[in-house]
Image (tube, rainbow, N blue to C red):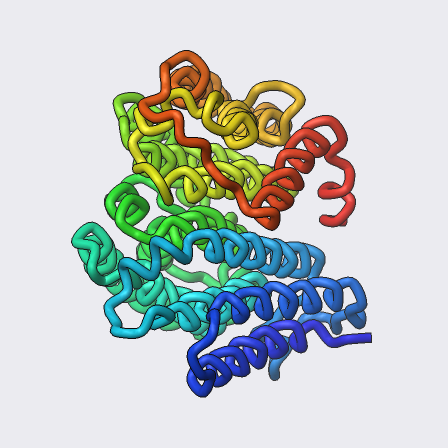
Length: 472
């Protein structure tokens, strides 16, 4: 049996081995490092099913910082699967990357681009197990520093440089809010462990105003990570300017880790009634802004950026309803739908652009890619018999059980908005004439990956039990 912390250690060792190998490798195809990373992460994923039982949470020592409950193990696997799929997309993105990385050699920079997501994955896995503010801060910084480099990797692209600067400045600002919030909470409770903070809030006579202020500062930092309103200002420009595989990683991996941390941080503060009302307001604003701002978009990456904000709103409804299971299932559905859309975007974007009009007549140029994007879009919209529909169903069911009528009404209305902006992409693919008759080539690995994502979206839309059982 394998102890749970060995998973993160194995991922870090894998990343360091690949980085050292890339540094000393001669002129060769650097895509071999992406394939090695995929195989290594797949081995770690397999090992995650043979974990030793985790000890009970302790008040001192390592296990007071690190938790290995069912939720943590589930999100570790989530991070591993996400990173594997991102590396598959990165292989197809190689031609674009070679044109955007400064360097005399043809393979310059590719090895680092394939290795950095592995270190990001290690940070995401630590975040899933973090039950202490110190561990939360360290893991967040490991993820953030990796994303700083990845977002601005194609340095010859002005949009990428703009995205990198905005992400760096605003992420550093959010880190400042996090540290300041932790300082306030520690000063009032004398604790950084989340369970001991909850105990102090229920047994000690602590002034509610400063503890709420400290929690609000922490919420600002986590709101940045999950792209919740009003902390979403960075999302459209960063999503548009970053390399497409990095955009997909930001949209799925960073958001999932942010929500699992939010679920853990929220638990000790639920004794304060103001916390619930604050989250209801943020969820409502996020739903309204994300969906209505997506309506006029003509760039597909920006549309998916505002869509990401909207889906953060639906996930916040699940958080407000205190339903970790519905949040986890929705994140799995969102992983499948979003990565499928970005995989198609990479395949098409290598020869065209990111505008919706560039997808005109895609059904005639590549019926497979058009069908894949069709499934991704209708699942994001919430059409029945897809994972996206069941994800929204579980979220709304949890809202009904907790009597969150306002969020339920806003959620149903904004789902209708989603049908409009998602289906206009489908209209372009199937109803408009193509601007060129040149067919699009799809690699065997990408075709296999997209087929698997399509199958998973449909299967989980009919039979969600595998995910629900994994959370027990």
